[in-house]
Length: 507
Image (tube, rainbow, N blue to C red):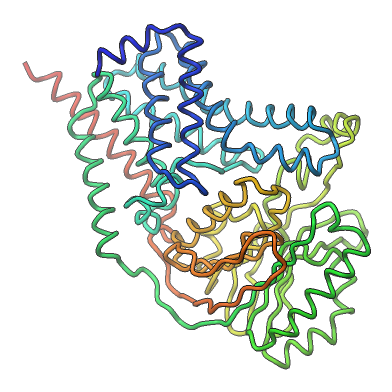
Protein backbone atom coordinates (compact mmCIF):
# COMPACT_ATOMS: atom_id res chain seq x y z
CA UNK A 1 0.00 0.00 0.00
CA UNK A 2 2.82 2.42 0.82
CA UNK A 3 4.31 1.75 -2.64
CA UNK A 4 0.95 2.69 -4.19
CA UNK A 5 0.89 5.91 -2.19
CA UNK A 6 4.44 6.70 -3.34
CA UNK A 7 3.44 6.18 -6.97
CA UNK A 8 0.36 8.30 -6.43
CA UNK A 9 2.48 11.20 -5.15
CA UNK A 10 4.47 11.14 -8.40
CA UNK A 11 1.42 11.84 -10.56
CA UNK A 12 1.19 15.21 -12.37
CA UNK A 13 0.00 18.01 -10.03
CA UNK A 14 -3.18 18.55 -12.06
CA UNK A 15 -4.15 14.88 -11.77
CA UNK A 16 -3.48 14.89 -8.02
CA UNK A 17 -5.67 17.98 -7.58
CA UNK A 18 -8.47 16.40 -9.62
CA UNK A 19 -8.31 13.30 -7.43
CA UNK A 20 -8.34 15.57 -4.37
CA UNK A 21 -11.42 17.43 -5.63
CA UNK A 22 -13.29 14.20 -6.36
CA UNK A 23 -12.43 12.78 -2.95
CA UNK A 24 -13.64 16.00 -1.33
CA UNK A 25 -16.98 15.77 -3.11
CA UNK A 26 -17.35 12.17 -1.92
CA UNK A 27 -17.25 13.46 1.65
CA UNK A 28 -20.61 15.20 1.23
CA UNK A 29 -22.29 11.78 1.01
CA UNK A 30 -21.71 11.35 4.76
CA UNK A 31 -24.15 14.14 5.54
CA UNK A 32 -27.91 14.32 5.24
CA UNK A 33 -29.79 13.30 3.13
CA UNK A 34 -27.28 10.62 2.03
CA UNK A 35 -25.94 9.32 5.38
CA UNK A 36 -23.08 7.27 3.87
CA UNK A 37 -20.73 7.85 6.81
CA UNK A 38 -17.50 6.39 5.26
CA UNK A 39 -17.58 9.10 2.58
CA UNK A 40 -16.15 11.82 4.80
CA UNK A 41 -13.39 9.52 6.01
CA UNK A 42 -12.38 9.08 2.36
CA UNK A 43 -12.08 12.86 2.02
CA UNK A 44 -9.99 13.27 5.17
CA UNK A 45 -7.75 10.28 4.48
CA UNK A 46 -6.95 11.67 1.03
CA UNK A 47 -6.48 15.16 2.51
CA UNK A 48 -4.01 13.76 5.05
CA UNK A 49 -2.17 11.70 2.42
CA UNK A 50 -1.78 14.75 0.20
CA UNK A 51 -0.31 16.72 3.09
CA UNK A 52 2.04 13.92 4.17
CA UNK A 53 3.36 13.28 0.66
CA UNK A 54 3.75 16.94 -0.34
CA UNK A 55 7.37 17.93 -1.10
CA UNK A 56 6.80 21.57 -0.02
CA UNK A 57 4.41 23.60 2.10
CA UNK A 58 3.18 25.39 -1.03
CA UNK A 59 2.31 22.07 -2.65
CA UNK A 60 0.47 21.03 0.51
CA UNK A 61 -1.50 24.28 0.41
CA UNK A 62 -2.78 23.69 -3.12
CA UNK A 63 -3.44 20.00 -2.59
CA UNK A 64 -5.44 20.77 0.53
CA UNK A 65 -7.33 23.40 -1.44
CA UNK A 66 -8.35 20.83 -4.04
CA UNK A 67 -9.98 18.55 -1.45
CA UNK A 68 -11.72 21.53 0.15
CA UNK A 69 -12.98 22.73 -3.23
CA UNK A 70 -14.68 19.42 -3.91
CA UNK A 71 -16.10 19.19 -0.40
CA UNK A 72 -17.46 22.71 0.01
CA UNK A 73 -18.33 23.11 -3.67
CA UNK A 74 -20.69 20.16 -3.41
CA UNK A 75 -21.62 20.57 0.26
CA UNK A 76 -22.87 24.17 0.20
CA UNK A 77 -24.07 24.29 -3.40
CA UNK A 78 -27.52 25.11 -2.00
CA UNK A 79 -26.28 28.66 -1.36
CA UNK A 80 -26.50 29.23 -5.12
CA UNK A 81 -30.21 28.37 -5.09
CA UNK A 82 -31.12 31.15 -2.65
CA UNK A 83 -28.96 33.77 -4.40
CA UNK A 84 -30.08 32.88 -7.93
CA UNK A 85 -33.77 32.54 -7.07
CA UNK A 86 -34.21 35.42 -4.64
CA UNK A 87 -31.11 37.62 -4.86
CA UNK A 88 -32.20 39.46 -8.01
CA UNK A 89 -28.68 39.27 -9.44
CA UNK A 90 -28.99 36.69 -12.21
CA UNK A 91 -27.36 33.29 -12.60
CA UNK A 92 -23.85 34.49 -13.51
CA UNK A 93 -23.48 36.82 -10.53
CA UNK A 94 -25.10 34.21 -8.27
CA UNK A 95 -22.54 31.65 -9.43
CA UNK A 96 -19.66 34.08 -8.83
CA UNK A 97 -20.90 34.96 -5.34
CA UNK A 98 -21.30 31.26 -4.50
CA UNK A 99 -17.82 30.53 -5.84
CA UNK A 100 -16.37 33.35 -3.75
CA UNK A 101 -18.07 31.93 -0.68
CA UNK A 102 -16.69 28.46 -1.39
CA UNK A 103 -13.18 29.89 -1.91
CA UNK A 104 -13.34 31.58 1.51
CA UNK A 105 -14.31 28.27 3.12
CA UNK A 106 -11.53 26.47 1.23
CA UNK A 107 -8.97 28.90 2.60
CA UNK A 108 -9.34 27.45 6.10
CA UNK A 109 -8.52 23.93 4.90
CA UNK A 110 -5.72 25.19 2.66
CA UNK A 111 -4.08 27.05 5.52
CA UNK A 112 -4.52 24.01 7.74
CA UNK A 113 -2.72 21.88 5.14
CA UNK A 114 0.09 24.46 4.89
CA UNK A 115 0.46 24.65 8.67
CA UNK A 116 0.36 20.85 9.00
CA UNK A 117 3.25 20.46 6.57
CA UNK A 118 5.41 22.91 8.51
CA UNK A 119 4.57 21.29 11.85
CA UNK A 120 5.27 17.78 10.55
CA UNK A 121 8.67 18.77 9.14
CA UNK A 122 9.83 21.05 11.96
CA UNK A 123 8.50 19.18 15.00
CA UNK A 124 8.94 15.52 14.19
CA UNK A 125 8.65 14.50 17.86
CA UNK A 126 4.90 14.13 17.26
CA UNK A 127 3.38 11.96 14.53
CA UNK A 128 1.90 13.57 11.43
CA UNK A 129 -1.62 12.50 12.42
CA UNK A 130 -1.50 14.63 15.58
CA UNK A 131 -0.32 17.74 13.74
CA UNK A 132 -2.91 17.31 10.97
CA UNK A 133 -5.66 16.90 13.56
CA UNK A 134 -4.64 19.97 15.55
CA UNK A 135 -4.21 22.16 12.46
CA UNK A 136 -7.48 21.14 10.83
CA UNK A 137 -9.50 21.47 14.05
CA UNK A 138 -8.08 24.96 14.61
CA UNK A 139 -9.01 25.80 11.01
CA UNK A 140 -12.54 24.48 11.49
CA UNK A 141 -12.88 26.39 14.75
CA UNK A 142 -11.80 29.59 13.00
CA UNK A 143 -14.29 28.92 10.20
CA UNK A 144 -16.99 28.49 12.84
CA UNK A 145 -16.32 31.75 14.69
CA UNK A 146 -14.88 34.48 12.43
CA UNK A 147 -17.44 37.06 11.19
CA UNK A 148 -20.20 35.23 13.15
CA UNK A 149 -18.85 31.97 11.70
CA UNK A 150 -20.14 29.23 9.43
CA UNK A 151 -20.08 26.01 11.51
CA UNK A 152 -21.76 23.96 8.80
CA UNK A 153 -20.54 20.50 7.67
CA UNK A 154 -18.13 20.11 10.58
CA UNK A 155 -16.32 16.73 10.67
CA UNK A 156 -18.37 15.48 13.62
CA UNK A 157 -21.64 15.70 11.68
CA UNK A 158 -20.51 12.84 9.45
CA UNK A 159 -20.94 10.21 12.17
CA UNK A 160 -24.69 10.31 12.86
CA UNK A 161 -25.11 6.63 11.99
CA UNK A 162 -22.06 5.39 13.89
CA UNK A 163 -21.23 4.64 17.53
CA UNK A 164 -19.50 8.02 17.80
CA UNK A 165 -22.94 9.66 17.90
CA UNK A 166 -23.10 8.51 21.53
CA UNK A 167 -20.19 10.78 22.43
CA UNK A 168 -22.21 13.94 21.81
CA UNK A 169 -23.65 14.23 25.34
CA UNK A 170 -20.08 13.94 26.66
CA UNK A 171 -18.11 16.30 24.43
CA UNK A 172 -20.44 17.65 21.77
CA UNK A 173 -19.71 18.23 18.11
CA UNK A 174 -16.06 19.16 18.73
CA UNK A 175 -15.29 15.84 20.44
CA UNK A 176 -16.77 13.84 17.56
CA UNK A 177 -14.96 16.11 15.08
CA UNK A 178 -11.64 15.51 16.84
CA UNK A 179 -12.13 11.73 16.77
CA UNK A 180 -13.10 11.75 13.08
CA UNK A 181 -10.06 13.79 12.03
CA UNK A 182 -7.68 11.86 14.28
CA UNK A 183 -8.96 8.51 12.99
CA UNK A 184 -8.69 9.57 9.35
CA UNK A 185 -5.20 11.04 9.70
CA UNK A 186 -4.00 7.93 11.58
CA UNK A 187 -5.28 5.76 8.71
CA UNK A 188 -3.38 7.99 6.28
CA UNK A 189 -0.18 7.52 8.31
CA UNK A 190 -0.57 3.76 8.16
CA UNK A 191 -1.22 3.83 4.40
CA UNK A 192 1.82 6.01 3.75
CA UNK A 193 4.07 3.94 6.01
CA UNK A 194 4.51 6.86 8.41
CA UNK A 195 4.74 6.09 12.13
CA UNK A 196 1.27 6.35 13.66
CA UNK A 197 2.41 5.24 17.14
CA UNK A 198 0.83 2.40 19.05
CA UNK A 199 -0.22 4.70 21.91
CA UNK A 200 -2.26 6.88 19.55
CA UNK A 201 -3.91 3.87 17.91
CA UNK A 202 -4.72 2.54 21.38
CA UNK A 203 -6.43 5.81 22.34
CA UNK A 204 -8.57 5.62 19.21
CA UNK A 205 -9.55 2.02 19.92
CA UNK A 206 -10.54 3.00 23.47
CA UNK A 207 -12.67 5.92 22.20
CA UNK A 208 -14.44 3.86 19.54
CA UNK A 209 -14.91 1.02 22.00
CA UNK A 210 -16.35 3.33 24.65
CA UNK A 211 -18.77 4.78 22.08
CA UNK A 212 -19.85 1.25 21.12
CA UNK A 213 -20.45 0.44 24.80
CA UNK A 214 -22.64 3.54 25.19
CA UNK A 215 -24.57 2.57 22.06
CA UNK A 216 -25.51 -0.83 23.53
CA UNK A 217 -25.66 0.24 27.18
CA UNK A 218 -26.91 3.85 27.07
CA UNK A 219 -26.58 6.22 30.00
CA UNK A 220 -29.46 8.49 30.93
CA UNK A 221 -28.00 11.94 31.64
CA UNK A 222 -31.33 13.78 32.02
CA UNK A 223 -34.74 13.14 33.58
CA UNK A 224 -38.17 13.57 32.01
CA UNK A 225 -40.38 15.99 33.94
CA UNK A 226 -43.53 16.20 31.82
CA UNK A 227 -45.16 16.32 28.38
CA UNK A 228 -46.60 19.14 26.34
CA UNK A 229 -49.09 18.55 23.52
CA UNK A 230 -47.71 20.66 20.70
CA UNK A 231 -48.89 21.59 17.20
CA UNK A 232 -46.53 22.93 14.54
CA UNK A 233 -48.05 24.90 11.67
CA UNK A 234 -46.29 24.75 8.30
CA UNK A 235 -47.66 27.55 6.12
CA UNK A 236 -45.74 26.71 2.92
CA UNK A 237 -45.75 30.33 1.74
CA UNK A 238 -43.74 31.01 -1.42
CA UNK A 239 -40.61 32.95 -0.62
CA UNK A 240 -41.02 35.48 -3.43
CA UNK A 241 -44.61 36.22 -2.30
CA UNK A 242 -44.12 36.11 1.46
CA UNK A 243 -43.82 39.86 2.05
CA UNK A 244 -46.53 41.00 -0.36
CA UNK A 245 -49.44 42.72 1.49
CA UNK A 246 -52.09 40.39 0.06
CA UNK A 247 -50.06 37.27 0.93
CA UNK A 248 -49.31 38.61 4.41
CA UNK A 249 -53.02 39.02 5.18
CA UNK A 250 -53.95 35.61 3.77
CA UNK A 251 -51.11 33.87 5.62
CA UNK A 252 -52.00 35.48 8.94
CA UNK A 253 -55.63 34.44 8.53
CA UNK A 254 -54.55 30.85 7.81
CA UNK A 255 -52.23 30.68 10.82
CA UNK A 256 -54.88 32.12 13.16
CA UNK A 257 -57.67 29.84 11.94
CA UNK A 258 -55.44 26.78 12.11
CA UNK A 259 -54.45 27.68 15.66
CA UNK A 260 -58.08 28.04 16.70
CA UNK A 261 -58.63 24.51 15.40
CA UNK A 262 -55.85 23.26 17.72
CA UNK A 263 -56.69 24.96 21.01
CA UNK A 264 -56.55 21.53 22.65
CA UNK A 265 -52.76 21.79 22.26
CA UNK A 266 -50.81 23.45 25.05
CA UNK A 267 -48.36 24.92 22.56
CA UNK A 268 -48.74 26.04 18.94
CA UNK A 269 -45.65 27.08 16.99
CA UNK A 270 -45.53 29.11 13.79
CA UNK A 271 -42.31 29.34 11.71
CA UNK A 272 -39.77 32.12 11.27
CA UNK A 273 -41.40 35.44 10.22
CA UNK A 274 -44.74 33.68 9.84
CA UNK A 275 -46.10 37.14 10.64
CA UNK A 276 -44.59 39.76 8.33
CA UNK A 277 -46.10 42.68 10.24
CA UNK A 278 -43.99 44.06 13.09
CA UNK A 279 -44.40 43.15 16.74
CA UNK A 280 -45.51 46.69 17.65
CA UNK A 281 -48.27 46.43 15.03
CA UNK A 282 -49.42 42.96 16.01
CA UNK A 283 -49.41 43.19 19.81
CA UNK A 284 -52.57 45.37 20.10
CA UNK A 285 -54.18 43.56 17.15
CA UNK A 286 -53.61 40.21 18.90
CA UNK A 287 -55.02 41.27 22.29
CA UNK A 288 -58.33 39.38 21.98
CA UNK A 289 -56.67 36.43 20.24
CA UNK A 290 -54.04 36.23 22.99
CA UNK A 291 -56.81 36.22 25.62
CA UNK A 292 -58.57 33.36 23.82
CA UNK A 293 -55.31 31.42 23.83
CA UNK A 294 -54.76 32.14 27.51
CA UNK A 295 -58.28 31.01 28.41
CA UNK A 296 -57.58 27.59 26.88
CA UNK A 297 -54.09 27.35 28.45
CA UNK A 298 -52.53 27.51 24.99
CA UNK A 299 -49.28 29.32 24.24
CA UNK A 300 -48.51 30.59 20.75
CA UNK A 301 -44.88 31.01 19.70
CA UNK A 302 -44.26 32.69 16.37
CA UNK A 303 -41.52 34.29 14.35
CA UNK A 304 -42.08 38.03 13.84
CA UNK A 305 -39.99 41.08 12.84
CA UNK A 306 -39.64 43.95 15.27
CA UNK A 307 -38.47 47.53 14.91
CA UNK A 308 -36.99 49.97 17.40
CA UNK A 309 -39.09 52.97 18.47
CA UNK A 310 -37.01 55.29 16.25
CA UNK A 311 -37.66 52.98 13.26
CA UNK A 312 -33.92 52.63 12.63
CA UNK A 313 -33.16 49.11 13.84
CA UNK A 314 -34.96 45.94 12.72
CA UNK A 315 -34.82 42.61 14.53
CA UNK A 316 -35.68 39.02 13.66
CA UNK A 317 -37.65 37.87 16.68
CA UNK A 318 -39.65 35.11 18.40
CA UNK A 319 -42.72 36.09 20.37
CA UNK A 320 -44.58 34.00 22.95
CA UNK A 321 -48.17 35.02 23.76
CA UNK A 322 -51.34 33.52 25.22
CA UNK A 323 -50.53 31.30 28.19
CA UNK A 324 -46.84 32.16 27.80
CA UNK A 325 -44.73 35.24 27.39
CA UNK A 326 -41.39 36.51 26.13
CA UNK A 327 -39.75 38.23 23.17
CA UNK A 328 -36.39 37.02 21.89
CA UNK A 329 -34.21 38.82 19.32
CA UNK A 330 -32.00 36.72 17.09
CA UNK A 331 -28.35 36.98 18.15
CA UNK A 332 -26.53 35.24 15.28
CA UNK A 333 -27.33 36.83 11.94
CA UNK A 334 -26.65 35.27 8.56
CA UNK A 335 -23.89 37.15 6.66
CA UNK A 336 -25.28 38.69 3.44
CA UNK A 337 -28.73 37.30 4.30
CA UNK A 338 -29.56 39.39 7.37
CA UNK A 339 -26.63 41.76 7.53
CA UNK A 340 -23.75 42.84 5.29
CA UNK A 341 -20.23 42.47 6.72
CA UNK A 342 -18.13 45.56 5.99
CA UNK A 343 -21.25 47.17 4.54
CA UNK A 344 -19.50 50.50 4.04
CA UNK A 345 -17.25 48.78 1.45
CA UNK A 346 -19.36 45.92 0.09
CA UNK A 347 -22.73 47.67 0.14
CA UNK A 348 -22.15 49.91 -2.89
CA UNK A 349 -20.93 46.91 -4.91
CA UNK A 350 -24.07 44.90 -4.14
CA UNK A 351 -26.19 47.94 -4.95
CA UNK A 352 -24.62 48.02 -8.41
CA UNK A 353 -25.51 44.34 -8.90
CA UNK A 354 -29.06 44.99 -7.70
CA UNK A 355 -28.76 42.66 -4.72
CA UNK A 356 -31.15 43.57 -1.88
CA UNK A 357 -29.47 44.85 1.27
CA UNK A 358 -30.40 43.35 4.62
CA UNK A 359 -30.19 45.44 7.76
CA UNK A 360 -31.24 43.34 10.76
CA UNK A 361 -29.57 44.05 14.09
CA UNK A 362 -28.51 41.31 16.47
CA UNK A 363 -30.09 40.94 19.89
CA UNK A 364 -28.31 41.12 23.25
CA UNK A 365 -26.08 38.24 24.29
CA UNK A 366 -27.93 37.63 27.55
CA UNK A 367 -31.64 37.12 26.89
CA UNK A 368 -34.00 35.04 29.03
CA UNK A 369 -35.75 31.94 27.72
CA UNK A 370 -39.37 32.12 26.68
CA UNK A 371 -42.10 30.91 29.02
CA UNK A 372 -44.72 28.35 27.96
CA UNK A 373 -47.02 27.89 30.94
CA UNK A 374 -44.73 26.53 33.64
CA UNK A 375 -42.03 25.44 31.18
CA UNK A 376 -38.91 27.30 30.05
CA UNK A 377 -38.17 27.24 26.32
CA UNK A 378 -34.78 28.04 24.80
CA UNK A 379 -35.51 29.73 21.43
CA UNK A 380 -33.33 29.67 18.32
CA UNK A 381 -34.09 31.28 14.98
CA UNK A 382 -33.03 29.36 11.87
CA UNK A 383 -29.23 29.53 11.57
CA UNK A 384 -28.70 29.86 15.33
CA UNK A 385 -29.23 26.15 15.92
CA UNK A 386 -25.84 25.46 14.27
CA UNK A 387 -24.01 27.20 17.15
CA UNK A 388 -23.46 24.45 19.70
CA UNK A 389 -22.06 26.78 22.34
CA UNK A 390 -25.01 29.18 22.12
CA UNK A 391 -27.40 26.27 22.58
CA UNK A 392 -25.31 24.87 25.44
CA UNK A 393 -25.43 28.14 27.37
CA UNK A 394 -29.25 28.31 27.21
CA UNK A 395 -30.01 24.68 28.03
CA UNK A 396 -29.71 24.98 31.81
CA UNK A 397 -32.75 27.29 32.02
CA UNK A 398 -34.88 25.33 29.57
CA UNK A 399 -37.12 22.26 29.60
CA UNK A 400 -36.99 21.89 25.82
CA UNK A 401 -35.64 23.73 22.75
CA UNK A 402 -37.51 25.42 19.92
CA UNK A 403 -36.05 26.35 16.57
CA UNK A 404 -38.09 28.12 13.90
CA UNK A 405 -36.85 28.49 10.35
CA UNK A 406 -37.69 29.42 6.80
CA UNK A 407 -35.73 27.02 4.60
CA UNK A 408 -37.85 28.00 1.61
CA UNK A 409 -34.77 30.00 0.52
CA UNK A 410 -33.08 26.74 -0.47
CA UNK A 411 -35.81 25.11 -2.56
CA UNK A 412 -35.44 21.39 -3.20
CA UNK A 413 -31.69 21.35 -2.47
CA UNK A 414 -30.23 19.32 0.39
CA UNK A 415 -29.64 22.44 2.48
CA UNK A 416 -32.82 21.90 4.57
CA UNK A 417 -31.83 18.28 5.21
CA UNK A 418 -28.40 19.31 6.46
CA UNK A 419 -30.11 21.88 8.67
CA UNK A 420 -32.39 19.22 10.17
CA UNK A 421 -29.39 16.97 10.80
CA UNK A 422 -27.66 19.73 12.76
CA UNK A 423 -30.77 20.15 14.94
CA UNK A 424 -30.63 16.43 15.74
CA UNK A 425 -27.07 16.85 17.02
CA UNK A 426 -28.13 19.74 19.27
CA UNK A 427 -30.88 17.59 20.77
CA UNK A 428 -28.44 14.75 21.50
CA UNK A 429 -25.83 17.11 22.99
CA UNK A 430 -28.32 18.90 25.23
CA UNK A 431 -30.53 15.98 26.26
CA UNK A 432 -33.60 17.98 25.24
CA UNK A 433 -36.45 17.70 22.78
CA UNK A 434 -36.05 20.03 19.80
CA UNK A 435 -39.30 21.38 18.37
CA UNK A 436 -38.64 22.53 14.80
CA UNK A 437 -41.26 24.59 12.94
CA UNK A 438 -40.52 25.70 9.38
CA UNK A 439 -42.30 27.47 6.54
CA UNK A 440 -41.78 24.86 3.79
CA UNK A 441 -40.18 22.00 5.74
CA UNK A 442 -38.61 20.13 7.27
CA UNK A 443 -40.95 20.53 10.26
CA UNK A 444 -40.22 17.92 12.92
CA UNK A 445 -40.08 16.79 16.54
CA UNK A 446 -36.66 15.50 17.64
CA UNK A 447 -36.32 13.63 20.93
CA UNK A 448 -33.54 13.88 23.50
CA UNK A 449 -31.70 11.01 21.79
CA UNK A 450 -31.40 12.97 18.54
CA UNK A 451 -34.08 10.90 16.78
CA UNK A 452 -36.88 12.34 14.65
CA UNK A 453 -40.12 11.09 16.21
CA UNK A 454 -42.52 13.00 13.95
CA UNK A 455 -41.99 14.80 10.65
CA UNK A 456 -44.19 16.72 8.20
CA UNK A 457 -43.75 16.46 4.42
CA UNK A 458 -41.95 19.27 2.62
CA UNK A 459 -43.72 21.88 0.49
CA UNK A 460 -47.19 21.23 1.88
CA UNK A 461 -49.46 23.47 3.93
CA UNK A 462 -50.08 21.26 6.94
CA UNK A 463 -49.84 20.80 10.70
CA UNK A 464 -47.92 18.34 12.84
CA UNK A 465 -49.07 17.44 16.37
CA UNK A 466 -47.15 15.38 18.91
CA UNK A 467 -46.27 15.27 22.59
CA UNK A 468 -43.06 17.16 23.33
CA UNK A 469 -41.34 15.83 26.44
CA UNK A 470 -39.77 18.20 28.94
CA UNK A 471 -36.45 17.28 30.60
CA UNK A 472 -34.34 18.56 33.45
CA UNK A 473 -30.68 18.01 34.29
CA UNK A 474 -27.60 18.55 32.15
CA UNK A 475 -25.35 16.33 30.10
CA UNK A 476 -21.57 16.32 30.66
CA UNK A 477 -21.17 18.43 27.52
CA UNK A 478 -23.58 21.08 28.80
CA UNK A 479 -21.62 21.15 32.06
CA UNK A 480 -18.04 20.92 30.73
CA UNK A 481 -18.24 22.35 27.20
CA UNK A 482 -14.94 22.11 25.26
CA UNK A 483 -12.98 20.47 28.09
CA UNK A 484 -13.46 16.80 27.07
CA UNK A 485 -12.19 17.62 23.57
CA UNK A 486 -9.22 19.58 24.88
CA UNK A 487 -8.41 16.73 27.28
CA UNK A 488 -8.41 14.21 24.42
CA UNK A 489 -6.07 16.37 22.34
CA UNK A 490 -3.75 16.96 25.29
CA UNK A 491 -3.60 13.22 26.00
CA UNK A 492 -2.77 12.49 22.36
CA UNK A 493 0.02 15.06 22.38
CA UNK A 494 1.38 13.84 25.72
CA UNK A 495 1.30 10.14 24.81
CA UNK A 496 2.87 10.80 21.43
CA UNK A 497 5.62 12.97 22.90
CA UNK A 498 6.45 10.47 25.64
CA UNK A 499 6.44 7.65 23.13
CA UNK A 500 8.91 9.63 21.01
CA UNK A 501 11.22 10.13 23.99
CA UNK A 502 11.17 6.42 24.79
CA UNK A 503 12.06 5.53 21.20
CA UNK A 504 14.98 7.98 21.21
CA UNK A 505 16.41 6.47 24.40
CA UNK A 506 15.93 2.90 23.25
CA UNK A 507 19.20 1.62 21.71
